[in-house]
Length: 161
Picture 1: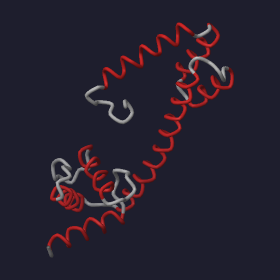
Picture 2: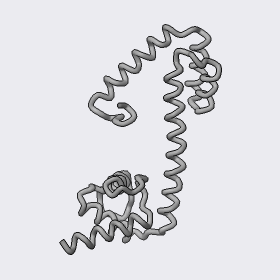
Picture 3: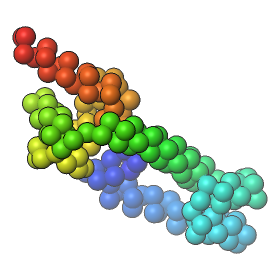
């Protein structure tokens, strides 16, 4: 829930429940296991959680270590994908005017890109992701050539309706 809705209505309740579970696990864990877990969480790296799992494969924090390791690996993969998408957008060398046109098209579709000012801010990135999701495009939050073509095609189709 917290990964999907970090600011959701029940986020604070969910965090409190997770904290209570963590406190109970700490009470139940052996001193060695607790020390290994503390080392892993202080480092908070994929390698640290792998090491915890190697040294305490049945430890009290096993499930949490697996979850954190998975989240870190996913974040690393996502960062690589985001970097590639960002580079692809930069390669388009979009002018401020072109960016305003893109923002205007997103706005006309009701995707709320924020001010149509030629600056791709967080609101614009969110609108781009919404557009990509709605059109079954790879959801990156960055513009690529295929998305620009699709966005323009959508705009032309609206004219003829």
